[in-house]
Image (cartoon, rainbow, N blue to C red):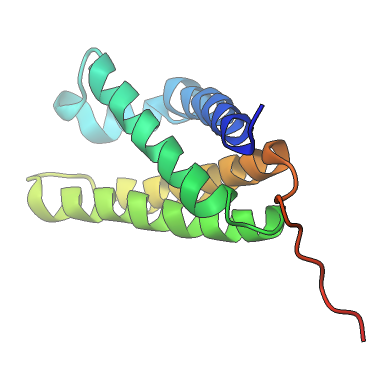
Length: 138
């Protein structure tokens, strides 16, 4: 199995599991209270699938595959998480009347943690680079 597919599967599985735990159990009361009537009664499945597919591909190609080790993948994942979740939250806060400001730091922190973890898992699953870069020894 190629590095891409190992990374893609690992990122998908870890992200879906962690996000379902977060959204479905841990943070559900926070979102219910903060969003109230803005919260959809049912998830629009196609929107969720499209989000996860594009986000996983970005994580794999930007954070996982080019990284020389899991630490670099984690840092790059944190960068992706910051950009994605801060863009979403700050845009909502700016343009949606009544968007709860309390969700901004909560969601950004979650995006950082989630994306860092899944990028790390993806890099560990992908295995070594084809040409593993070794640091020079003096």
